[in-house]
Image 1 (cartoon, helix red, strand yellow):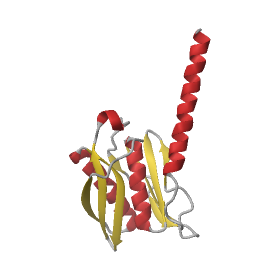
Image 2 (tube, rainbow, N blue to C red):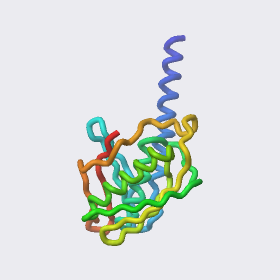
Image 3 (cartoon, rainbow, N blue to C red):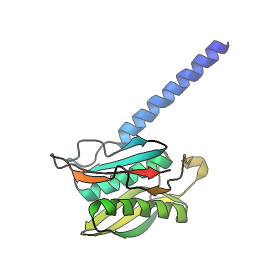
Length: 173
C-alpha cells in the first residue's frame, strides 16, 4: 500500500511538472513575427533569478522582461484591472532596463499589485511605460517570492545578428 501511494504521488508530481512545462511553453509563444524565440525566460544565478525578455525592438524586449519578472512571483493569470503609468530615465539602454524593472518592483510593493501586461515607449534616455494588473490575491496568485530589486549582474541589452533584441539581468529575490 505504501509503494502504491508513493508511486501515485510521484505520478502526480510528474503530471504537475508536465502541466507547468506546457504552461511555460504557451506563455513563451511570441506575438511578434520578428521574434521567433521565446518571449521571455528565466536563467539561474545562485540564490537569485535572471530574467530575459526578447522582442523585435528594445521596448518589446523590456515588456517581455516584465512578464518574466511577474512569473518569478506567480504563474496565475493577472487581470489587467488597473493601469499604472511609470517613467524612468537613465544615461544608457542597459541602465534604463534596470530602472524599468525596479519601477515595476516598486509599484508591486507599494500598491500590493501584480502586473501581467506591459507597454513601453523609449525615447532616448527616457522610458514611458504602462503596467496593467490587479491587487494581489494570496489564495489565487499564491506568490512564491517577492522580488527585491534588479541588479547589474548579467546586465545586457542588445540585438543579435538577426535583429532580435534581448534585455536581461539578475533580480534579487
